[in-house]
Every structure is written in C-alpha cells, then in structure tokens.
Image (cartoon, rainbow, N blue to C red; front, side):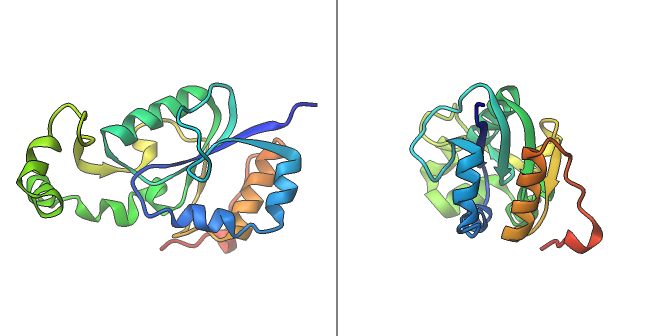
Length: 177
C-alpha cells in the first residue's frame, strides 16, 4: 500500500509552526512509517509536487511569492490545512495591515526597496498592500489554530486526516495567540 503524501509549506510567518511540527519528536518516526513527506521548508525540494494528499500551510499571504505558492499548493493538494494563527487569521504577519507599504519597504530595504518591492517580482517578491489569511485566497479543508499550535494538536489533526476523518477541534483543543 502506498504511503500518503504529506507536505508542509511556509508563507509569511515566523516558522514557529514548523518548530512545533518538529516537536512531534518520536512521533515523526511513526509518521514516517505511515506517510511520505514530499515537500517542506525542512527539506531541499524546490518545486511543489502534484498529487499531494495533505498539505499543512503555515503563514499568511504577504507577497507575490506567497500567493503563487499557495495557488500551486491548492491545485496540487487533496486536503489543505491552515497551519497556525497566521494562516488562520493573519495574526502577527497581518499587524502591518494599515501601515504604509512604501514606508515599510524603505525601512527594511532602503530607497531601492520601494522600487523593487513594487515591480515585477524579479528582484524582490511584490509586497501586497495587506496581509491575507489563506482562506481568503483559496479554499481550506481544515484549520489548525495556535501560535504556534501545540505538537499534540498537530499530531491529533494529522492522525485524524491519515485515518480519513475530519478533525473535530473541541473547545478544549483550541488556543489562539
């Protein structure tokens, strides 16, 4: 029997959700026995593959690269999980919403950042005017909240999905921020 193909992706965010994913510790060995990790920022794969069964997407859509990757993920994934508060609500990443984009680019990259950050994305990805949670861009099949989500919650959601069940997040499992 073929293993289920799992992917994780990192959009605009801090990577704390992936740190929690690694906190699965010995459960990662169990996961490896049941599923094949085919794409992740913790491995060296450059192109998101087709035919992925479950993808955990961390972070929000903050720029043109995030948008392109998220659209590819949606096309190539049977189940897409919003992984962490930035993916679910925008959270910390969206704190720049309402601020002046040019001022942000100037503060981070200098005067050239204002030029490059608004062009075709060949030098820098085009910074969006505002940050968007992923469900505002593509359809999402499950939500895994938390900043970051607890490893036990990640394990619960993954194992439910591997068993073909929709994870039910009861109030005692939910924690935001």
